Amino acid sequence: MANINDFKAKLAGGGARANQFKVTMPFPGYAQVGGEIEDLAFLCTATSIPSMTVANINVPFRGRAIKIAGDRTIPSWSITVLNDTNFKLRNAFERWQNGINNMTDNEGLTNPVDYQVDAFVDHLDRNGNNIKSYTLRGLFPTEIGGIDLSMGETTEIETFGVTFEYQYFETNTTT
Image (cartoon, rainbow, N blue to C red; front, side, top):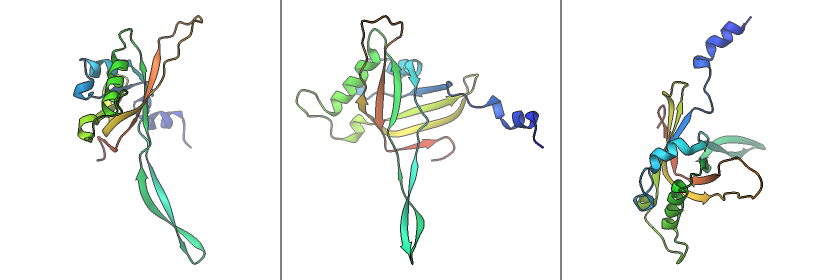
C-alpha cells in the first residue's frame, strides 16, 4: 500500500510552482525604446503555458463513427503586465499594434516578418533554474486590455492584459 513517503518520492523537486516563471520577447524594432525585454521579464505577473488541441474527425462507417485525428489548433495566449509610471511596456505594445494597423489611416505592415516575433516562456524551479521552456513562434498582439481607473480608495498597482496570436510553439523537449 502506498504511503506518504512514496508520494513525496514521486513528486520531484516538491512539484512545479505556478509562480515560478519568466516571459521574455523582443519587440519589433519600430516598437522599441530600449529595455522592454528585461522589463517584461520582471513586470509580467501572469500567463499560462500554451495550450493546444488536436480535433477529431468523425468518419461514418456502417452506422458507427470512427474517430480520426484532425488538425491541431493553437488558441490565443495572454499575459498580464504591471504598469509602471512611465507606461514603458504599455507604450511599446501600443506602438507594436499601431505598426500592424495605424490608428489614423488604417494602414500598416503587410509582411509578417516585420511585425511577428518569437516569445519565450520559461518555467523555473525554486532556485530560478529553467525546468521547461516554450518558444512561441510568429507572435503578435491582437488585444491590449484596458486599465481600470477609479477615484475610490485603492492600493493596487495598475495591470493590463495583452492577448497574442502565434503560429505554433516548440519546447525544450519537442519541436
